[in-house]
Image (cartoon, rainbow, N blue to C red; front, side):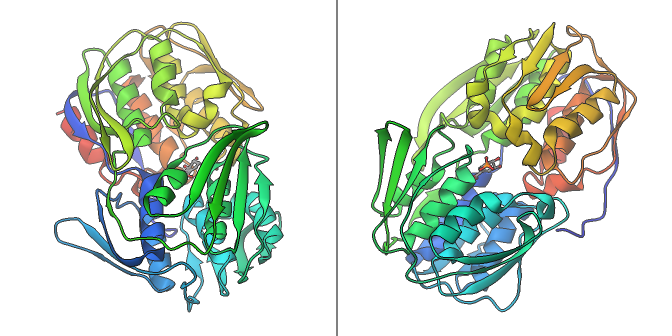
Length: 441
Ligand code: S3P
């Protein structure tokens, strides 16, 4: 995990992408499937779980706190939960690897249990701000000692009973929202989160599915999400839909490499996750949703994507929460569009697995892309359909989405792009390069 050996890779153009791909299970839903199943009383089954390092870190943590989690030969995972309130004191620090979602959501869970947990992570995770989760969880009564700047390693001493709060999110963050709701699960009374800007709602959908009493209303300041604590969660059979963030790499690759025509099967189309599709369609991309259906309480579709000339746009800032993980790959699309694409209002990119504004600026600029950096985004002048010059280096900074985005950039480059390390791809999409080979065979 945090000790992976760097894997350099030079990527050059390979011709059109053709064929069909099924992307792995959604990362956000996979984390939550394991956590909620581990808190249910009885045995849950999970199909289509993403088996990337981030999700495996969550599985290891839930095991360390008492859940029994096994993977069958058929790829179906079985979880025997301890019940809300039943988490056990882990014997060692929990290593969260590269995973911000594991860390912030588990901080929430632990906050209302009478246990003390130390969270550690790799260099990337240890540089990310945890103050946004520390603040509300402290209000609920947890005692948290962090490293300077509210970073990992940190020690969290939970409390039971915790104090229910009403918390207005100061940043648009599904992780912070979920941390408070999960702390609320084992807190007497009603815990409320007010969300001025909507973010991914998987926690809300899934907690309801597990039988928690959770309501969502519109209020003057935004959505009011209320959860009644001391809940009893019932075990579930979960089918995890495909990850739209992983699908995004193939959507852009097929859109920018001439002659491409692919189908991406089983993509989660939850409206809080489809910002990239909207932005690409505004740019002129050919993305057709076929066989729209519902899987495990989430809308799902197959996407047929064909090469199309892209035009620059001003990316509407209000799309940011629904495509926050997709900006790096959108920047690649903008690099071959005609005109100057401006993507601003995405300040949160500064605190992801890397500073994704600075990391993508450096990687694209080193490969001949013309751009301008702002505090909250980038403006990129595209080639108008011609290849990106390429021939430069790209530093992935322990960030899976940078490694995959720059791989896609390499497919549309005149000279190879030398990525220093693609090992981080293991955190969210272990089969990424195998799929790339199959689509370009
Ligand atoms: C996630 C929320 C987002 C996203 C992350 C997954 C989640 O983070 O970037 O990859 O599963 O709740 P923020 O809450 O920091 O926006």
